[in-house]
Image 1 (spheres, rainbow, N blue to C red):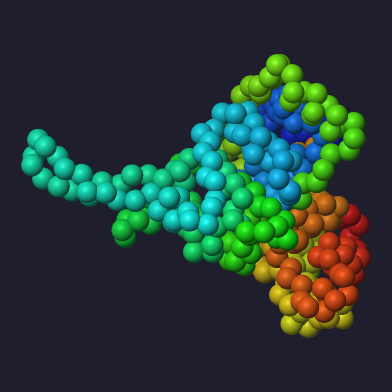
Image 2 (spheres, rainbow, N blue to C red):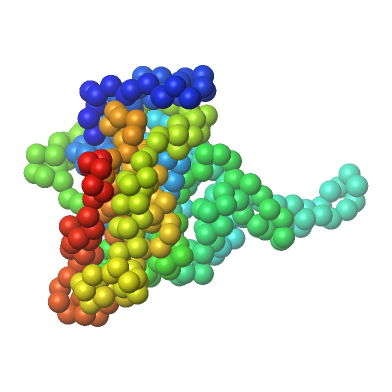
Length: 348
């Protein structure tokens, strides 16, 4: 992310609401990054992708080994955005009611009557950290499906809206580790990004080791609030995208499907299930957020390509042939980008 680039004015058809939101974004973006750097060292690409998710109002899955500051990063973002934060440690014995809440029988001594009272679960928050989500069975994971899609939960037949804005940031350990369950496809598809977080380089790790073993603790300060994030999410959707660029995003998703007539041979050979319609939507929405955060008010094919990895990596399922040939999802996405032609209008 280019912190020094200026963000352009919104096109003329926008109103005072969008102009004010854009001014807030321009004013606070560098402050936000500066506050993140108080607690997080390195991980520039991870932070950029997290900001894209936040400003587009979406959800995110973060994959990485234990001890890479995944929880610390999300907690810091909640503090910087001045949003309510709750964390659920997913374990094998976690129940759906532990997430969404439950009804209990409550006795009213003044009226001498018993009635059902709803006790909200931790899902009633702004930022929910589903820590190590793949350590609980799919039955419990499914408790988040309605919350992530409709921003509401249904308990005993009653629909209960969640407070806006609502984000789910889920962390998961690599599937090779013991005691993990694969996430169902319906659950995976609700995450805009699957962000991979890796080990730091030697200099960055040295800085982390010295910083976290001293008695100095630098806490980030709030920069935005919930109303700001709702405005920014609306602003992102106002970013225009040319027809050929939108078609390029759709073609990337469609070409990943082995049963598509446009699928190349390597997709038919190595992929059992390709990206669905949400992938097309998220490619476009994430590209809009990236364009705005990088200082231009239009979407290019370069923006689509930049977000293709985190959007597609959890939506393309490889088969046994890919495993035998030692082909990774990242390799397939790279070949997909090489295969799908860009529009000839020069919007790259």
